[in-house]
Structures are given as structure tokens and as C-alpha cells.
Length: 185
Ligand SMILES: Nc1[nH]c(=O)nc2c1ncn2[C@H]1C[C@H](O)[C@@H](COP(=O)(O)OP(=O)(O)OP(=O)(O)O)O1
Image 1 (tube, helix red, strand yellow):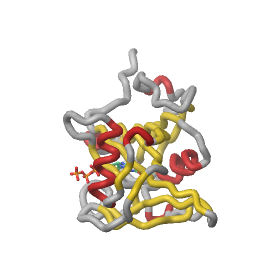
Image 2 (spheres, rainbow, N blue to C red; image 1 turned 90 degrees about the vertical axis):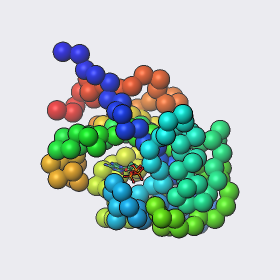
Image 3 (tube, rainbow, N blue to C red; image 1 turned 30 degrees about the horizontal axis):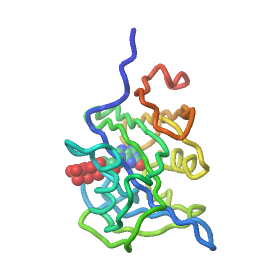
Image 4 (tube, protein in one colour; image 1 turned 30 degrees about the vertical axis):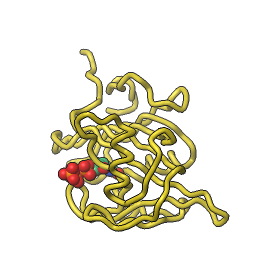
């Protein structure tokens, strides 16, 4: 039986500001104020709107949620994560994650997010989505990959997680399928 591509109608982006300072690397997360995942610490981001490409959406979402201004041409693609919610398939998402070190402004709270810098080696995983510890740790270690996250019936805990490393530093042009993640059952 052919495996359909994992890309879904809900296409979202995350845009993670990163600062490499003398006292280590910091990344900007924020407390989500409303909508899907409200109450969790998340990366700035949201849905791609009609007429936008992923990079434009990442820059727009970062600005709307944190007031930071990033350069779309300088975004660093880091991962594409397919979130699967078997208990709520309408929430399945196709999420492209960017890092940015080329941004200006100071983070400010919005109706969507209360931004806060965290040391990359001391992230608030207990306040984040359970799966974020799996993919964010790998991203910060320099891995670039597609990942499949299959959540459990509670739509919170992780049932399965698998990655396929990208051949280079660009987002693969072809959407992955379930068959590309052989250790996922
Ligand atoms: N399992 C998961 N782990 C994770 O770390 N982030 C997840 C996740 N499942 C979904 N997300 C994120 C990705 C995306 O940024 C967000 C959902 O998109 P939105 O922020 O657009 O949702 P909202 O319900 O707030 O949408 P709007 O109505 O457009 O405000 O949830």
C-alpha cells in the first residue's frame, strides 16, 4: 500500500532566535497565551497564511509574537517535524523550524506570547511540549532532519519519535512519508 506524504493542511513554522554570547548560547522561547498549546513554553511561530512561503511566515510570526525583526534570507532551516495526534487527527501539523541569529529589536510581550531568553543548556523542558526535548536538543546539537512525532492518546506524551537526517543543510524538496521512518510502528 503506498504511503501518503506526511505534509498536512496545517502547515506551521517556528522561528527560534539564537544568541551566541560570551556566557554561552541563549534561545528565545515564550509562554503561549492562547490557542493550541496555551500555557506551555514554546518557540515563536504559527500557521503559514495563504500567499506566504515558510520563510515569510517565520519572519511574520516572530514579529507578531515577540516584536523581533528577522531577515528571511538569513533564516537557518533546522528541522521539519511532522506532529501526529492519532486521538485528534485534525490537529496533525507539518512544522518547519528555523533558527535565526540575524534579527534586530528587543523582545516584547504580545497577546500571543510572553518571550523569555533561556540558556541553551538549561531549557525549561518541564514546561514545554514533551516532544520538544527530543527534537530541540538535536537541533541545538547541530543536527538537521525530518522528524515524525506520534503523540499518545492524551495528545501530550510521546508514543513514537524518529528522525531522518537531511543530506545537507536545506529542507528536502520532497515530503517524507511514513515509510521513510521505518522504526515507527
Ligand atoms: N507536539 C507539539 N510540540 C511542539 O513543540 N509544538 C507543537 C506541537 N503541536 C503543535 N505545536 C505548535 C506548532 C505551532 O506553533 C502551534 C500551533 O499553531 P498556532 O500557534 O498557529 O496555533 P493557534 O491555535 O494559536 O493558532 P491561531 O488560531 O492561528 O492563533 O503549536
